[in-house]
Structure formats: C-alpha cells, structure tokens
Image 1 (cartoon, rainbow, N blue to C red):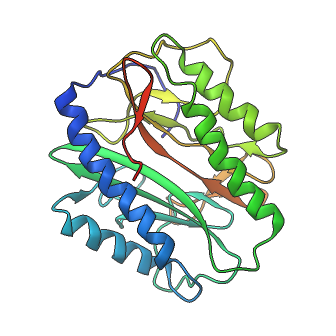
Image 2 (image 1 turned 90 degrees about the horizontal axis):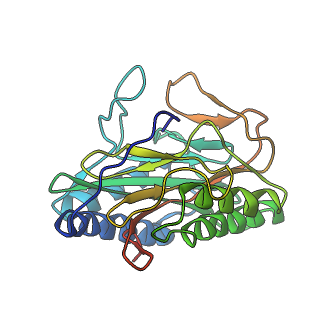
Length: 260
C-alpha cells in the first residue's frame, strides 16, 4: 500500500471477532505451507493449495480480483521469490529450487472483514548464511515493531523499532510500500511505514486494527515494478524477505489476530 493521508476506523469487539476468525484461517494456511513448500513445486501450486484451504473454511480470498494496478490481481496469494519483494503473481512455470526464498502473502475475508499476513520460507536446504540471517532479522523486526503497540504510544514508535532492528543488522527496509490499517477493506488508514522517528505520528487507540509488514532487503531499499504490472522487485537484484501480522490494539497492549 502506498503512503498517503492518515485516518483511522476503530473496530468493535464484534468486528474484531470476525477479523480474528479470518486471521485464524490465514495463520493456519501459512503454518501448513511449511510442509508444502519444497523444491520442485511451482508458485501456482502454493496458490492452489491456499485457495482450496480458504474455500473449505467457507471464506473468500481477499486478493483475487483486487484492483490496484492496470488490471485486477489474478490470484489468491502473492508469491514472491528471491529478489521479488511483494505482489508476485503465482505461475505454473515458476518452479522452486533448493535455496530459494519464497514469500507468501495471504488475505481472507470473513463476513466482510479482512485478515492479512505474510511469511518468508526457505526452500529445501543449501541456503546461504545471508539468506538465513535476512529471514531472521526480517521476522525479528516485525516482532520488535509489534512490541511497541500499546495504547498511548505513537505509530512512529512501531516504524522506528522496525527500521532500527533492520538497519543495525546491515539490511534495508523498503520505503515505497508500507503496512496499513485493515477492517472492512483490505487497505484502510493509517499508513504504517517501516521507517520513521519514535514518538511521532498518531496515537494508538484500542479498537485500531493494523497490518504490520516489514519488507527487508539485503541490498538497497529501492524497488521497481516488473512488466507484469504487479510484481515488485529489488532494484539491485538483492534478496528480499517479507513478514506480516494483523494486530488489534487492546486496552492493555495488542492481540495478534493472524497467529496460530
């Protein structure tokens, strides 16, 4: 989601319960994909498996047909490999190989409410030490950002924690794409950059639901969009990792709605 003007829609407990149900399905699929992802399968296989799980749960894919570029997104999941940052289109010809990194982003709709999460996986073995460390730091940055979520704190505290974790470990955070509010729409306000100054931005309030999603590159933070109109890649060709959770701000802190 692109940076733009800030604004917030608070959610009721009933609305959050629907998002919790959606998030549970997202989390379970991402967990199950750990057993599915292996050398020899295609990115389309990941998409087919994920959509089947969503349909069996009597819910709807959030990404399929979503408008955002020159044409609707044509798949249930975004599957991005190696230097692909986000929005990779699943392809029956793209076969995963030993040592690949594959990021899977999944959204689900339950009774009109959305859950959204992402995870990066290692395919097989023979992965480089740099790739292993990239995944570790990207996931750590997500949880460091989440740890800042508390009523009265500010959105900049989340952004700053993510950036600090990533950059002190020698990686970079993507700046052209950010986290977002979520609810009756997949992308709501506020925008949540993965970089920024602590103690700045809007205050966190119980009832906010936020999709926190650091995108972390080995090299420079600059990205570009490929000719398919959707797939975003690192400009320098370096590896990238992507992690995301949907988080509800509570009276005492936070709840991860997409955690199994």
